[in-house]
Length: 278
Ligand code: FAD
Image 1 (cartoon, rainbow, N blue to C red):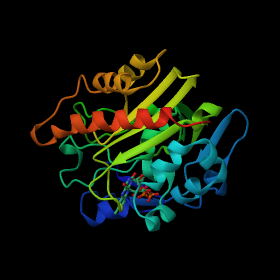
Image 2: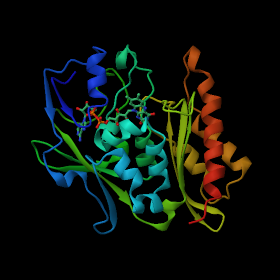
Image 3: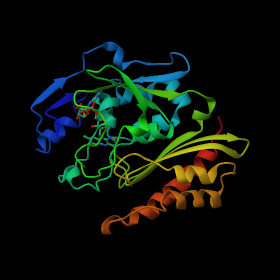
């Protein structure tokens, strides 16, 4: 585990330290490094979300509310209002499971919501570190457990997430985040689906799908996307897509129910998203 951890909103890291799950040697408060890192703006052909913007500030931003429903819903359905006022986007995507086995028990599902919205939008992440800045597809930030389940992302020690670049286009308005959880007040997802649809008439030009609560990282469902291309979305095509999304799913006893739950979540999300007007 990294000897140094950053303190952004502190809502995850302080929790994990209290639980004695993480005991970093150094905690570096990064809140005041530069006021610019909390900005929310549209510089040119991208929409930019600074990594230190709070979840609440982003979810309340009028341009985000108009153009990125999937982002607003993923943020609004995460945690409590009090936490959203403190928690930052950067800290949110890097939150870790609260499971006491931590990721040594490597089938713990990735707990966050906002990351699925970023994956479904094909967003990019800006990172900086001692070797300078770099930008990469957000989808590549989290890694599979493999033989090193304690290493959850491709960030190098000391690297900071600076911001997120969202694509711009009317099609981002036909997007949504559907989250299924045990109770309607704050709770992590049992299953979730982020869906972004680019339609020409009723026909799918491009569908982007990310699943939450069912995999160790935010899960891009490319097989499902491929089944939808060139077709209209109805019950049958949505069910076929959901089948493709979970065709390779591996369950372990108690979580077998997640396959059916995940499929139904995706079918509902696709049908609802296809009805949205832009
Ligand atoms: P911090 O706690 O400050 O940091 C978290 C981690 O990220 C640390 O390891 C830190 O080193 C690292 N870090 C922070 N910022 C950066 C950066 N810019 N670059 C590199 N590393 C960084 N989240 C959901 O998505 N859905 C939920 O349903 C949900 N429910 C919750 C319920 C409760 C009761 C609580 C306490 C939390 C819940 N959360 C949920 C998690 C919450 O959203 C996160 O705690 C929060 O987003 C973390 O943000 P933070 O700024 O407080 O991060």
